[in-house]
Length: 387
Image (cartoon, rainbow, N blue to C red; front, side):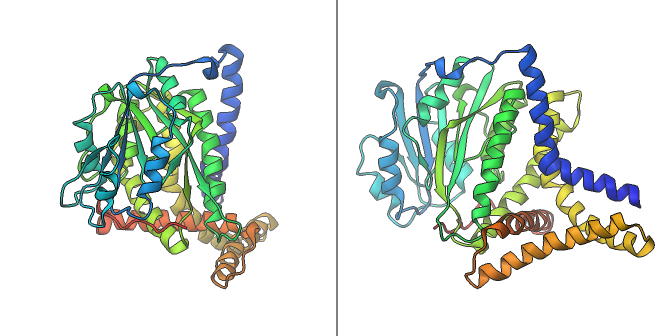
């Protein structure tokens, strides 16, 4: 039992901390033998189309349009497509006022992935960039993404997600810390070999490599990019191209979003099971299992398992080590619960945001598993309300 406990603890540690440490040392080793090219010296501007899928975004769409039209890219190589299928709040009417933008609209809502597939039928550029309607890009984002395509081995490029946190923000501020850590891991992932999946806030692909994913796909951005990676191309990562969005309005809204992502993670794991074969693409498999699969499947369950196994061991032994371990777990979860209780009373202690968000995130993962296997997760979802 003790051995099982330590193995389980190691997996949990490896999932959230250990993999980052391993990446750090692997990159240090790689730099000894291979010198990285300075991407800042590369200027490459292939033809590019920006695709935005928007559903009932009347309140924010004009700001998104202005942000899009302010982006720096050669005009003769740049096209913009907005798809508003199913929108009923006048989003399409607002976009129609801007002749620089190609508007695609039809009645009936079939989900984001169906809208994206329809837009792709109109794309004839070398590169296509996808971004969400509620995110805002830095002016140089497209130039930063496009330069990576000078490397023929790159099939997709992911930008960085940044979360705007207000000073008065609740524990969703933990999301900001989480994405900073994620961004560091993605940077190291790419330096070692490839990012494992792109985030929908901002990513791009070579148009020739785009393959439609199944219509019931929950994490379309992830699967579109991973299909390209599984064909032997790299997914690059550029933190200098970033998408800014507000955090969820509250933890209830964030839970809604996280559960959907968790259900999508289970679905994606099943559909990319070919990567579980270490002989297929060894390095990508190592990165994928370490960075994604463990978080989406085993580790959230192990956290519960370790807690109760530790209780059992404490009742069976007098060794102080296991009692200290039990106390450490109790203190961690107590701080998470305290963070929740204080936040519900509008008392915000930021040091509690991290354990609170960490426990919350893994709770959402478990709920997502149950939802996927029990009732399923629709490709149509209610958007999480943002601040």
